[in-house]
Length: 185
Image (cartoon, rainbow, N blue to C red):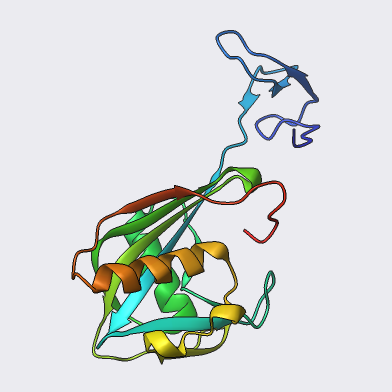
């Protein structure tokens, strides 16, 4: 369990206990009774397509600096998943996209994350490299740098896309990734 010694609501000390009606150990404020829930983070992103190519960004940040990824990042408060995916694509690839559909969703329980990726179309073929990106590039399937992909979720999404494209049918994919032995995300 993550250590939270002080209440974010009132600043008093917390204790670990199972609140009434719950089954899990939580940090509970000894003064105001506020229960501190630690929940998974949601990552939103885009599989950006343009003329049978996909857009990948080379990471300029850790983790996995220098490796290729799909534009994605943490969802912000007060935005939808679609807005988060479009914002992250704008920030990382300087690209505007039209969202077509929810395409892949990955549970990654060992690191407390949920990846939500939308299949999108690049608007007017324009893209660049934001602050978190060394470079971005459109790739044909044969040119994908498979050995240099940053995360298993990126590889799985690309493999789904190229397989689904053969029949021009793009179902939503839901999977659980990672294990205690696989620490790459």
